[in-house]
Amino acid sequence: MPTLRIALAQDNPVVGDLDHNADLIRRAATASTAAGAHLLATGEHSLTGYPVEDLALRHSFVEASRERLERLAEEIAADGNGSLPVIVGYIDADGPIGSTTGHGVRNALALLQDGKVLFRYYKYHFPNYGVFDEERYFVEGHELHLARIGGVDVAFTICEDVWGGVPFAVAAEAGAGLVVNINASPYEQGKQDRRLAVVTERAAEVGAPIAYLNVVGGQDELVFDGGSMVVGADGRILSSARRFAPELLVTDIEAEAAKGGDIANHSSSAMSTILHVLSEEPATVETRIEPSHAPQLDRLEEIWEALRLGLGDYVRKNGFASVIFGLSGGIDSALTAVLARDAIGADKVHVVSMPSQYSSSHSLDDAADLAERCGLHYSVEAIQPIVDSYLAEIAISGLAVENLQARVRGSLLMALSNQHGHLVLAPGNKSEYAVGYSTIYGDAVGGFAPIKDVLKTLVYELATWRNAKARSLGETEPIPENTILKPPSAELRPDQKDSDSLPDYEVLDGILTGYVDGDAGREDLVAQGYPADVVDRVAGLVDRAEYKRRQSAPGTKITVKSFGRDRRLPITNKFRGKPS
Image (cartoon, rainbow, N blue to C red; front, side, top):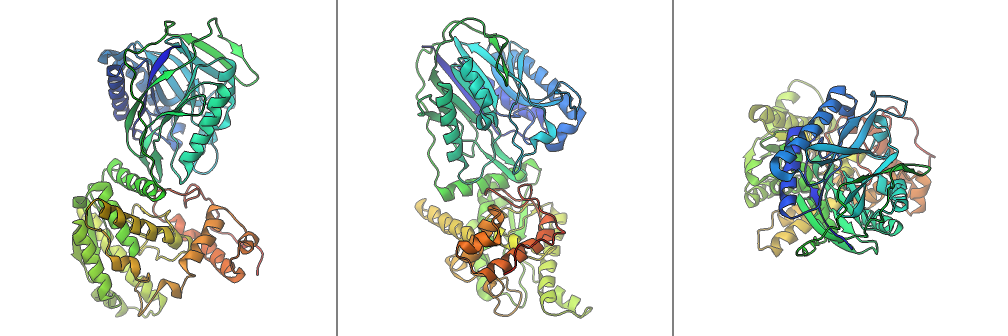
């Protein structure tokens, strides 16, 4: 039985930076050759980055992708790695954009060897749900390509193909000894378990190992978490890569030898198969590589790593040198501060305390304490004189004065951003964004909202977890205990608490999980035990706050349904379900 050494390049490409991404692939090819690999696979859209969104509708971008692929093949050969078969994900086209003739823009992979493009495979199944819109851009392919490498027939597929399954059924009919599935699969809680389940199912169906490769990195609100793996036909995990970090995963796979003969032009009802013979001699290795198995992450560590990577890559990939935001002494800005420090380093994090007459002394002390514990750039800008100057000119009261304070703070942060080039972060959480418990153009200002998809109850869990992690490492707890223990408050009026305006967060977040993430109706939520009047109130707040969310900054997605691409509801909307 041949032993095929395969390398999976779990890299972090940048959308649109074709030269940078090509360099990542070249470095992976050099490392794979040094490791004695028989095959290198790179991720879905490894050359272009993912998702390219409407760049796929630009002829110039598609042509740049095609041209850069050809040059990349030549460069890999010039680097001395020409004999290594390399799979590259990219954008292709075999017809005009928007064509209805079965030709058009393609989500593609190509196999490169000896300075040439040997073949191109076009993705068959497209995700068109949640954050995905691939049917808007791409035309499906109907040919499954196999390459005989080291005497093993290897089939190649792209991402959703493993969920839809048709190319895998065709690969089984063709007698594939290994199936490679390249992905750009974004993170959400619990998704890695679902990936493993479907890959295991497909491996059993094909009767062959599956090499599942995922990219890593942040792209706007999406985070790609890696977690590449090789799963045997019996369901055993033969090797696995780290989550949330680049890695070259090299694995020795015992695979069934090709049965011989020519399967070219074999066709099924869905796809035809084309075989490309690269090497018939059964692959061998002198010394087997010890399989790599990445450590499992617990639930909170996994979420933290997703948030850290999402924020860090947004800052780095968009060319910001530093971030700034208000540090109030409350839990949300505290968590944002520690997250920013972990993501980009304390020297790049600037925090501003902006007290008013309603700011408590303990909140000011907590903010200063956290900044010192974390080594952040800390300054104080009192807002009361500015607020008073407004109040001397206009007659407002109540909620308008509360919102004025938040908007003065927002203006100060944007001014400091303009002066020094910082990216302003918005520290709001998902619970607040859901019910509109924030001030538009005030505390909601910013270019990125790191915890936008984190419910308030999870904010507290993460804060407690991060302190516990610091203790386990012998480090100073970054978040003052008082920040975690005190009742949450916006501190915009005397003795204000969040509970004055909102249900208990345990109740609120439970309703939001059903109503927002699960699209549950009023009757469903009442049946779960939530009081009907509270459900009606929360649902009304969520619906009325849609206009605010449309104007909010992007933030890292960690749940099954985040605010943004995932959830698309009309702003003008009178539907409220059945009244109580």
